[in-house]
Image (cartoon, rainbow, N blue to C red; front, side):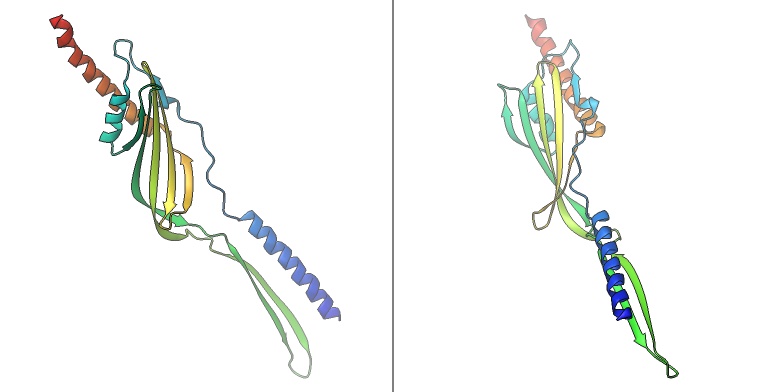
Length: 197
């Protein structure tokens, strides 16, 4: 009775530890959306002509995006680009428990309890082929430009694996440089026409 009662208490204690470990090490939710970088909102110089939806669409297509919608009335262009990537699936750690030893020697009787609590799946995770989808929206209002990018990773079965805001400095500054060059080229093309007038 004494051994059985203490074994019951010990098992309950170990189970409580295991459950606490599962809650602590559970897989994190999809990444929270961060604020867009300041470079994702800018204005063209006053000497430039207002940015057009057609210019934005052409710039995105040159970067491998497929334009999904181009609304001149509201100055909005939506585009999408997909590319293969690799996703490391970090499984939720699985607790393991063992074990109980009962035996005797030399005419005597002894019992022992050996308990080990471990967490399986704490490594880098399984490598999985995936697809990265980038969805971009660019809004233009005269010389004002606003860029937003959303990035989502899908597993080979089509399930959403990760999501984050991709409106970072590197992407926005690159697109800004491209759009500025296009606007400058358009301004140069206007000069001969003005000279002929």
